[in-house]
Image (cartoon, rainbow, N blue to C red; front, top):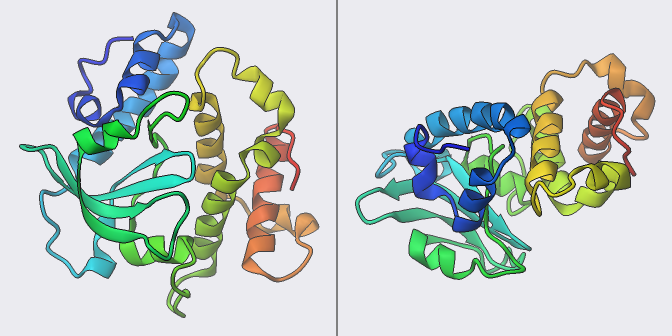
Length: 230
């Protein structure tokens, strides 16, 4: 696959993802051309420095590896340094805002634990990210469907096997360690905001946001004929 049209994406991609994309077979190129085209537009929006209070600052990109996550708010393109929020090894208590260079991020990127730029990340403000990670409680002005989406996003991340099912995991073949799962999870997450309430009602066991989020995911998965352990 030719990556030349996606200059911003190339600047932010870990080497293992660059290698994966360059080795794609022809049958997958159209799919990833569409994905990378959307990603290119999103990444171009990252400011050098946000000019709003931190809670309202937009989280534009997301890297993940194992239980660690890096959320990008600002990007100094000249020195290739990010400002954002880092959660190392799932330790939310010691998670913090700060600066990190792309070179430093790449130091974490050692087989078999490979760094990934999240192709399906949808930008949210920092306050919403804190709600997603359950660092703070949601405020009244947050709409229920928005919170359900955030909870479901975290649920997908923590339980990929139960969401995707064994059959789907088998289908990824040699497409890479996480790429196929990322595409499927992205499809489910994108559909969350559009699914009608009557469709999920048969799957809701109680009134909690988590139950509704799981029900949405299950309904979508069933509609796509994806096995789910929800």
